Length: 256
Image (cartoon, rainbow, N blue to C red):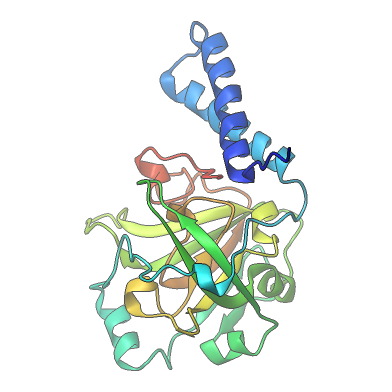
């Protein structure tokens, strides 16, 4: 008899077991609920990285598995004037800035990105809300761009800044941003995607460029990318937790 084990379910089960043991043992000692949650997140990351060591890939699917409709979630029509102007110009003036702790800062147009080595993959998008869709993505592996910029030795994380303000706030804290560490940044399935299902990204799905981090949950897949920054940490960026939703209580590592 052959037993088939879904790798993502195995990861989830292993992480849940580790989290349960840790939270049970730490309940009396944790200085706060957030301390325990932070330890649980670290164990989740360790469990997944252990089971998916190196450059192992998230599952990929045949074209016959594509979802009839790929759900657009989060921001679907940014109201910012600068972004609307880019849309009206068909993104001809859009540039992706790559900076921070790099040797060679970059400003890349869509044509520049399309001229770089590309990858196409059909993967499942898993949302924290409980739904999933399968889509086909084409784009530049993030690692290709980072290699061209040249990371300094002090760089530990990559932060993605987006055009959309998910919440309209006076202090700018509603602006969407995300981050990953260098393990995920250089994973072969981590894409700066410009096409979905054989066509250029539409506005609801993050045009002109969005992030795909296929081993993490959907809130990590930042849309409407404008800038990438290599940093040592994100304590002074946004609310200091590494992303828009992380500043509102989500775990920074959304591994699946």
